[in-house]
Image (cartoon, rainbow, N blue to C red; front, side, top):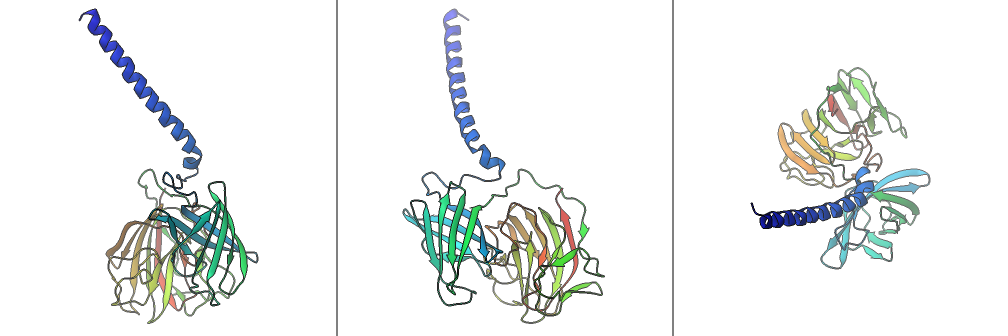
Length: 337
């Protein structure tokens, strides 16, 4: 090879290395800027050019010293309008027709749902930095409460879970390993291998908390009754007497207010029915009476009646006992290692 060709090849290699180095430098700077968010389990809040209010927010409302969980999502609709969804202390995710945002201040109103009173809920807040909100909520009965919020975590998992040893959550003999929220009399009973709530009263939850898991649970409810299984105490898989009805976002086997099952696999009231639920991060799969009705769907946020809004933390299995009689048995959980 002559000296001229050697010179051309050397010069081309230098340019390629320089170009690659430059790109790697830019990428490194970008990743360095993101690293605090990535380490915390958060992602950039918006697409390029979006207002900083866009995203999902985990809210805690201070109701006279009682900490009430709530949730907010703000998204773009078209070029200039912001819309969203809001989950209050109870009920489902409700649409927000318009979110006002200007100079770091946000406001919107929504019709009341299950709250007492007949006025719209009025919500306003101020953005603090890029990942916190502080504001007030005026309820449908005219009471005003302070609230704060943080940007909701993504809960993405880098790899598939390795499952551990199955754990029997209910021993069939007593309520060991379970406790109620404590505001009312505990109506739950352990009778002949069945965990039963003969009438409306307290919700009950496991003493242990869990992150990612596979849950097997069997339930039976009388005609017209209603209950639910809360995953990590925050995401309700609905239980209701909806035999023969079309699937809906608030009917049996739905993730309440968010995810509609692809079919209604319910049996008539009075028969034993089965949930096999897998939760990994936000991805949920629900097998109902042997049929996969929800497959690896993303749960956007907490549902009404959640224990708290701290989505990044492990949480208990919570069973709803304040909506009518319900019975459970054969409750097994397989946590991820």
